[in-house]
Image (tube, rainbow, N blue to C red; front, side):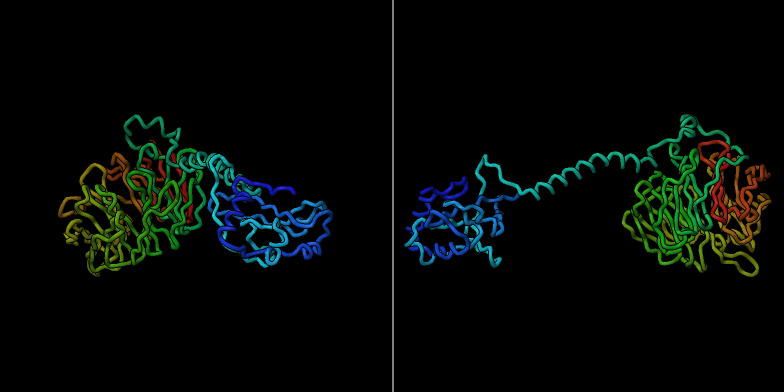
Length: 495
């Protein structure tokens, strides 16, 4: 009689018999030879030899499974030694008749009704390589290929995403080693940037010199964008963090983040590279203006359709101070030198004077320093601080720019004003050049105006747009370069 096939992880026949004799009588027996012969004809034999099927190991050695096969494939040989691996066998009443008819513990599983009995845990002997099913090998190979592909693509993706801040424009690079010279007047159109579908409220060059080719724009179409404004003119990234019009936006001093305020009552700090929101604050009212603290950029102020101005800490995302006055809305916020004091422009105008149009506050104590700064009956949609002198200017709806001292009690210089442009209710902004020698302003007529700061003389008028020009931003590095934007959503670069 042929012996049973032995496997590395199966018990021998003698060990099994010894175990059964020690336990007493067997609890399970196989079905009779006559019943098995009804299933298939067997020639030249009077009993079965049941061979244990090999184990299939998964990645976990403690979790083994038996490979089930179709019933018809178990009786595919017509000799006296064939396997019965799928049909459930019973040893009851046949052990005495057929002492060789035995089952091993590996066969203690029912294949017919789907019920399973407890499995004996198996371990893989050292040096034995476990078998892995073909399907599992296929999925493992796919995972390895996918991981390899992602590893190969990651450097390219990182390089592509980091091009916004890593590349230095060839046009800006020659000017970096030298100190910026005197500001010049741009006279011809370099490029026109179209992409916004609503009025562009502001444009601003990046303050970091080697990133100064980047231009930020904020629009009423609920988006703000970063452009290559020095060379290619293409849009590098579109940011859709807001569900309302983006009223104001500015760069952080490091040039890696953007601070924006929107009519959706939120102020958001966004990462330039990834476009992810670093901080998002619920302001409680529509944001019309923002201001970063000059010596502590983590602190910023928000103002808008409210009688209060709020100070926020971006590290904790909490409000740290509130400046409250009897006004309806805040038009602009300006930190004076050092950040000890700040000026707020409001829409509050009385019959005989513009009381509380400009209000000075102490930043630390939130105490009101003065509200009798500007005494004319015009609101001031924008403010700008002189980069060198102790003075600031206010754009007024009287179609002129007024000059004030940045030292208390913030007196206005009545002998100096810059006239020639028109405001007419639009949020027209004004801005100094980096050396402070020139003052630029937009106009409701669509033109851009450049003034000599010292003698208030108009140096040049640029016919920039057909719609109201809301902002003129002069480049901090490139001489005679400026960006303008208008109410129709168009941005132009001038040189």
